[in-house]
Length: 115
Image 1: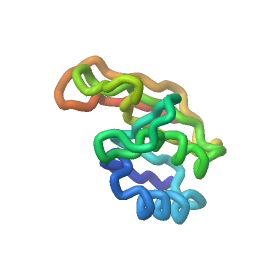
Image 2 (image 1 turned 60 degrees about the vertical axis):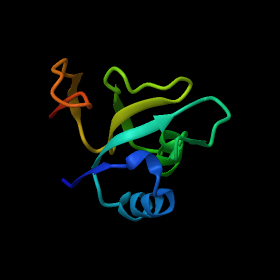
Image 3 (image 1 turned 90 degrees about the vertical axis):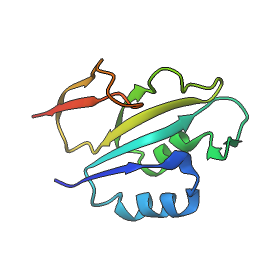
């Protein structure tokens, strides 16, 4: 099993980030991404970050199941939503997923149990 964890920096380096995800999509079982933005609004860039980064990543990792944690308080700028994501290939059995309530960082801890 292979895991990749990465702070996407909001997609500020969008082209190399998409290239990395494309290149590794066939071999990585679990992607853990921090600072992924998503919006349904007609916004491309928000404060230098890619406002629809989640949609771009999902277009590459179509078969992966997505689990996410809303960003910790104080960082959610409407209408752009900010979250951390774990994307898992269909071959990985996830028994449980939880967002832990402990505030120890500007990101909430994610816990995933596997079969």
